[in-house]
Image (cartoon, rainbow, N blue to C red):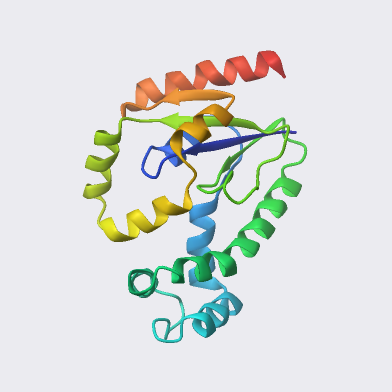
Length: 192
C-alpha cells in the first residue's frame, strides 16, 4: 500500500482535491468533528484542560473558539488531547484499507505532527493566497484571529513545497483541479 499525503495551506482545497484521487480518504478534520460530537472521554479531558470554556457535551466549536482566542496556549492543549485520538483513527483506517493500492491522507498537520513516513508520497495543493483569503472569508465559521493561531501551527509553505513529491495547482475550478489530480496520479502509478 502506498500512502499519499495531501498537504498545503489552510483553505487551499486539500480536502476537495483528496476526493478526486479515487482511493479511500482519511479526512482528519471530519474525524476531529466526530470526536467532538461522540467521544465523551475526549470531552472530559478537554473540559479538565479548559474548565472555563467547555461546559457541555457534545463539544461546541464556538466554545473551543472562545478558548483559543482567550489564551494562545489553549490551542496546544486541545491539539495535545485530540492528536492521539486522530492518530489512532488514522492507524485504524490504514489497517482497514491495507489491501488497497493507495490511501489518501488528508491531514492538515501531517508533516508538522510527524505523521508522514519516509516512503509516503506528499502532494502539495498550491493556491493563490488572495483566492484562499477570499474563500476563507466566505466561510460561515471564519474567524481571522483563530486562522492566525492555526497558521502558526503550520510549517512555512516553502518548506512544505520542497518536501513534496508533487505540487498540484488549484485555481478553484473543479475541472482544472480534477485534471491536475489525474495527471499527478498517472505519474504516481507509472512510478509505483
